[in-house]
Length: 71
Image (cartoon, rainbow, N blue to C red; front, side, top):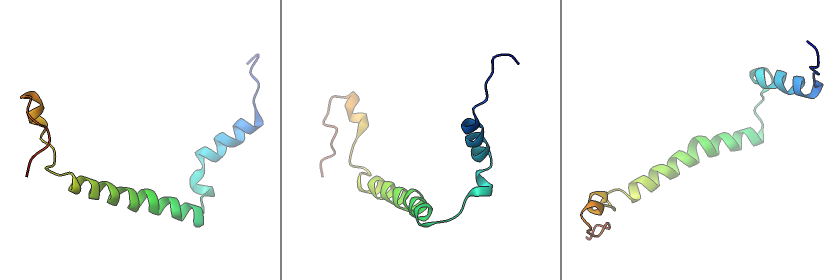
């Protein structure tokens, strides 16, 4: 293979990326990220979905009526 140079840093990064399960350890940072993305974001999106449920009527956009549902 003429002309190909191997970068040791790239090889080390590729090895660590392929074997992440061997090097992963739970620490404070990993726990915070897991709780945020696994609990806070889904709960926040669920609350947002319930608060905006039946608030908008997108079928009225085709009939030129007001899109906001009046109570």
